Amino acid sequence: MTDKDQLGKSSIQNLIPVWLRNRWGIVCGALGLYILLYTAWTRFHWGATESFRLIPSWDVDRNFALISDLAYQPVSIFATIVAWRIAFNAALDTKLRRAWFILGLAVLAQTLGDTIWFYLEVILGQEPFPSAADIFYIAFYPLALLGLLSLPSAPLRPTERWRVGLDLAVVMVTAWMAIWFFIISPTAAQYENGKLDQILAAAYPVGDLVLLGGIFVLLFRSTEGAVRSMLMLYLTGLLLNVAGDLSYAYASLQGTYVSGGWMDLSWILAYWFFALAAIRQKYTKDPALGSLSARVFARSSFALPLVAIGLGYGMLIWVARSGFAADSAVQSLFIGAGLLTIFVVGRQVMALRDNQRLNGELNEHLIQLDQAYSMLNTERDRAERLLLNVLPEAIANRLKLGQATIADSFGEVTVLFADIVDFTSLSARISPEQLVNMLNQVFSAFDQLAEKHGLEKIKTIGDAYMIVSGLNDPNPNQAEAVTAMALDMQTELHRLSEITGIDLKVRIGIDTGPVVAGVIGTKKFIYDLWGDTVNTASRMESQGMAGRIQVTQRLYERLKGKYQFEKRGLMQVKGKGEMTTYLVVGQNPI
Image (cartoon, rainbow, N blue to C red):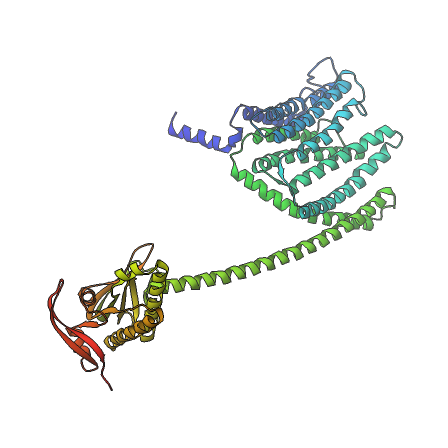
């Protein structure tokens, strides 16, 4: 097979739905061709003409009745088989299987009715109406309704049940008005001499009305996706069946009905769609058809009550303008219009209540959203404060803007390290609670001093404290600010010593010069400094004297006119060699 042939075969297969690509689908397709053949027969009447009779010993009318009566049987029998194929499939849901068993019974009832009708009309040559066939025909309606209502569906809330009930009442009253006026009342008048004839003649349109109610209920109910896809086909079959019944009733009243005509196609097509629905039920992997059916159902359930209202009142206006006599049919029409008005008003009241409820829910939801927004703002502010406790504000803003890597060089900043003297021995003498409380008091006091002098706290490590000046907010007096804070730290520590009764002293080291600053970490951010200035300030602290502030030569050179210093002289500094260092005594008097 060439590529062109394979492409043509693939294109043809794509035209056939996936759920029909099996032996049952093939049979159903063959029956579709059979229906096309029957359609042609309704025009040419092969086998029931003077030139060719299917059974030569029978007359044309009897051959005509034979073909037209038996034409339904292949399709209806197949529809029953495929329906019960679903019913006896143990892999499916029990409720679904029960529904399909009842739907199969409904089609079987029609098949038995057709068989009895054929036997009476063709074999016995008797008038088939009224007869036992009517029992099975009429049984179709309650069985089909029961089967449809047995299909799995989501339960409705109380308010939805009221809404659906009122919408259904509007549609059903309009349908009743039309069927009563155009079919039931004239049919009853036609058979006024026979009570049984009247009852049976009226039973069919009443049954159709019941089926219409079932169809509308299913449109309003929320069903599963696979069930919705099947219902598109099954409801099409029901509508064809109802259309056939009503057309037959109306044509019979007008004396224009001819057996074996195009009107009979609706019934045979209805059986075919019943079979398609049963085959479709087993296939649950077509979301496109499921979503399409959901949209059709949703729009239909919205539009049908509105259309029904228009038709109901339009029918009333048409009758009033046409000058019909005020017989029972017209009186019933006005009674129906009164009921329709009551249900429409009830529906509007229900809609008003629904709107009030929805407005209340919307207002409540808006309040909840406002509360949630306020809580979100509160949490955002809290997170902002926590972030600013870890990072400088300028750095935090850069992170929030999405900057992944933050690293900056600064030509001159002033770095301070402070460490509590004899902290190790102190921690062994007091309880953990006292120790943590004391550290909290000390570092909280230092934080307040840093804020007072406009300095940036970098971190605390154990009992060590590090601040810097001149990073993100250049300050020409950065060295003076850091030195002033160092002196204040000593004063604050003396005050805390008197309060706590613990002799607290601190070693402080300061240096000024270039550094590199940046953010490291991905989950727990830390803003830190690196460079010779940082290392030297740390050495000034670690090799300093208890209760004193030790600074480098370059800091001394910057502040020697503003602060009093005591030269400590040359000392060996780890990693630096010999360095001249100074101790800050105090600020020069102005």
